[in-house]
Length: 75
Image 1 (cartoon, rainbow, N blue to C red):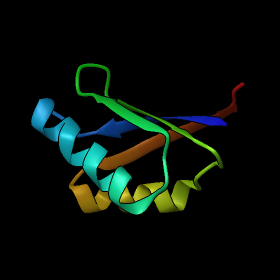
Image 2 (image 1 turned 90 degrees about the vertical axis):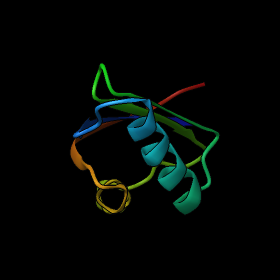
Image 3 (image 1 turned 120 degrees about the horizontal axis):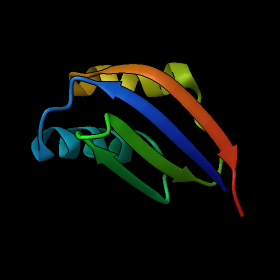
Image 4 (image 1 turned 120 degrees about the vertical axis):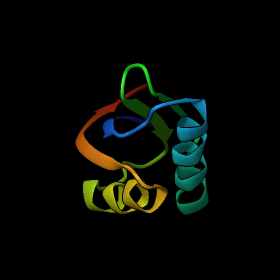
C-alpha cells in the first residue's frame, strides 16, 4: 500500500474537499481519499502509487492546483 500526500491550492470549504475527493475516486482505484481545506492537503491510500502528472490532471479537473506530492510505502 502507498500513502500519497498532496498539497492542493484553492480548497476553501468542505464542498471543495468533496469535489477533489470525488474526482480522485472517479479516476483512480483508491482505498481511501480524504481532503482538508484547512490544511490544504489530500491524503490518498492505494495499492499502487499514482503519478504526479495523473494526480495533477485530476486536481486541475476539479478546479484546483496540485502544488506538491509526497509518496510513501505503508504496511
